[in-house]
Image (cartoon, rainbow, N blue to C red; front, side):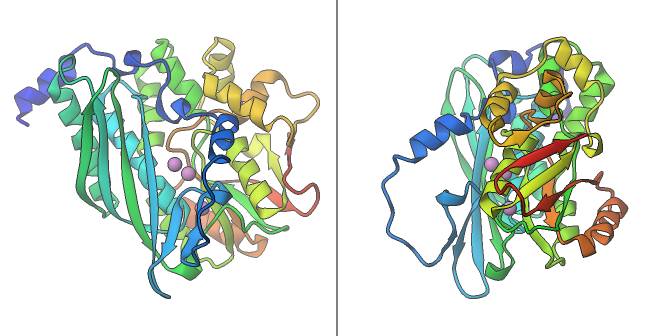
Length: 358
Ligand code: CO
Ligand code: CO
Ligand code: CO
């Protein structure tokens, strides 16, 4: 694409996020509805090489090829979450690649998944989405090997990603152990912020900030965590929000979690924006879904609870690490430029439950 054409694209007044009612991982089908559907899948014959499959609600599937090698496979796509098409491509790619990092794998190849109203929107917009994604895939060190596109009323974009992992070094969400420390590597609040973009409530600097949270790869965080055998579990925070994904870790691992609200890194102005009505539907669904397994502090109001359930897109890694290594891992993450924070710990009481403390 020439520079002139690129300028033309950025000058078009099309607001990508106005083309759909929900954006990013907020357009996921809710966990309740999804599990009802998945329950009806026919039982597959057990396959000893399927190391991580459907039954654990994990980030990606893992299939063993040999004693030294397994493949990690994942797919993610959604409607535009930001208006700039290049940024949208970057966010979609960082988000799709994230599930490979969350399993402890290294991305190898990626395929584009495109739905686009080709007669209605400028083709340059699609070119920019693909350029943004392609640059993220390259930053991840993976190869873009193809894709598939359909003509659709509403734009949607994402990627299917395949990664490699050693079969003995898989980080599922099911291995957290009592005594572990919980580390989160990105702030929460992306759902509330991106809903605020649609409603014109964020300034340019705030839009830049939330976009950079979403376009940051979990690559560095995954690389810093890689040598630690004491990382017992890991997942990335996306559509089901911090408490939704944490509750899957609690249930999958058969442990209780304590999360300290004041320690959870958050994007600025969340309360103010939520009070102004910028709470996405996905966030409310998440809250309803975890209500039975989360005990909030008695004096925490509805907004405070919703913020912890906010539907993320391309969120950080939630890492459960043995307490003996927690300080060192946290220092290593920060030294590598990852805005990581210690947000709680793992207990043996109330398995499957989360206690939120102030
Ligand atoms: Co995930
Ligand atoms: Co995913
Ligand atoms: Co994982």
